Length: 249
Image (tube, rainbow, N blue to C red):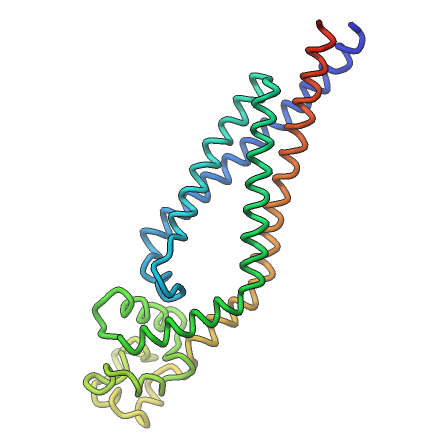
């Protein structure tokens, strides 16, 4: 019995070290998600509205998920140092739930990517039709057009159907050089063709999504399957500690 206990102790020490390292990395992941959620809420809240038909809770989901992972990351470190089998099993159970949630989210995002594109088309078109240059969605449209050097949905002529065009013409955010644009130019589609960006924003956004969807999905699945390592370590450590305690009795 004593020799078997001597054999299991180095294994337990090794598993504890690996699980503490894993839990720390897991905790860092939670901090990153929390930071991204807060940043997204403060900085990108206006622009996210162009992708969702209704108000989206995506930043709050990231904040909540990040906070939960931070708490359970600390719990994992505590459970590992304490060497409590039931705590380690609870930690493994939480990791399995995170794994399933991330797997479902990743598959859903990849499967429904075309619906996301259709939603963006509807919401962006609606934002253009209700554009006034002052509200949040209008500022979001301006930001997209300036940052991507694009204009309209398919092209700059889409603005001719907007009520805003009747009074003001095409928004200045479409201009290749805003100092070279004036109200008369933006009212005339023929003249505006030489002043504004020709590419539509929809094609640029959707092509970006198509190009990077594989990378995003790969990273998401990689993070999800990393939870399996933590589950395996926690279950093995719990088993070895339980066996060691049994041998001591």
